[in-house]
Amino acid sequence: MFSKHNATDYSETLPGIRQKTLVFGKRTLMTEFLLRAGSAVPDHHHPHEQTGYLVAGHIQLRIGDATVDTRPGDSWCIPTNVTHGAQVLGDSVAIEIFSPVRDDYLPKDTGKEREAQNKTTGSDLHI
Image (cartoon, rainbow, N blue to C red; front, side, top):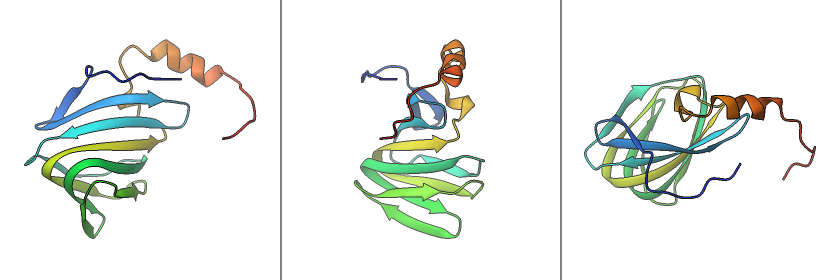
């Protein structure tokens, strides 16, 4: 699956937090987050492993008992079911990958496409 950049299809999930699913496969899903300075992601947890990369901005990220100031180029990995949250200190852009796929982040029109992906058998080539 390929996805070309476009500036539409973002949804505001929390005040000051907009997100868009960029691409997904059978086991992973990639999301772009646009975070406005002063906004917050409240502490929460979920059964998905979450790996992220800060493209731009400044975020104070909490993972379990650790709190870290993240700047562009920093990355993180949040294990399944570990409590985490964030304070957005400057307008930011983050890319995060979830595994397994978060069904609640799938675009609404992907039901049949997802079914087809789950049935596809491809090459054993792993890159």
